[in-house]
Length: 334
Ligand SMILES: NC(=O)c1ccc[n+]([C@@H]2O[C@H](COP(=O)([O-])OP(=O)(O)OC[C@H]3O[C@@H](n4cnc5c(N)ncnc54)[C@H](OP(=O)(O)O)[C@@H]3O)[C@@H](O)[C@H]2O)c1
Image (cartoon, rainbow, N blue to C red):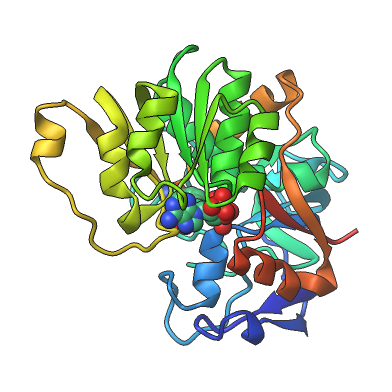
């Protein structure tokens, strides 16, 4: 099998293509021919050595792949050869609340990932898909995280207003889901051209966070009350996100594109205003399945900025590192 491997910390230049022996197929496992893989910011963080991984070990990067079942091990009951599937982000989190065991073994960090032409999954670690592979591979991390933020953790109803930071994979997924569900969406970006694309996707108000360093004031001016913030910014944005959200609203803490270090957090910013902060970690297989249904029902075509060939994996990561993308970046294998 063909795969990419990297020693965490070796960065994009350390990403090497390799011919590896195919993995043996155990009981209750399926072999999936990978047709497409999407990149997430955490994959770039892993390459840079800024994501928790087993020390001193090379890894196959990436957590999100879609393709076709080509072989079933003994005892497999959920799948047949020819079924189209996407892997789940967490192999062991099927349903219910997260636990340390359920969120262990995430591919592309705790274990080998899916930037390969075939992968072996436990039969419970896959979701059936009717989407084409380029679309289907954008769901497992970014799509499920956006779904969890808005509808599971956020429990938002039509008419609610969400604030989405930047125009990367999670935020544009959240924009597409928000508009399909009848929510109002405010989007921030460093780029007016990207904000124009966000408006074309239905964004109700937009703010350029470089032109407005105190963007929380501009969000209030153009967007009014915010019920929930999809907080992917981290240390540079968290305090402003809290300031933006209405009394009783929620900031869903997801990422740290501006850094994962200490953010200014004053208890009084939460107490008198009854604002809530909640961290989320992607989501369960059940959430992935609900998202797959919702996407099919609403005929959502996930926004994919660019599709690279398998031999162009380094270029795909370079685009992500430059922040040049809008929505998702995909590596397609056929
Ligand atoms: N908790 C979880 O389960 C979970 C799941 C998925 C992702 N994440 C995290 O969420 C974050 C986003 O992931 P992703 O894959 O969506 O990343 P991505 O596709 O690489 O998106 C990054 C975007 O963030 C925006 N950005 C950069 N600096 C910003 C700032 N200071 N303020 C506002 N926006 C800024 C930029 O948008 P513009 O170019 O428009 O300015 C950039 O394109 C990452 O930190 C990732 O690790 C966490």
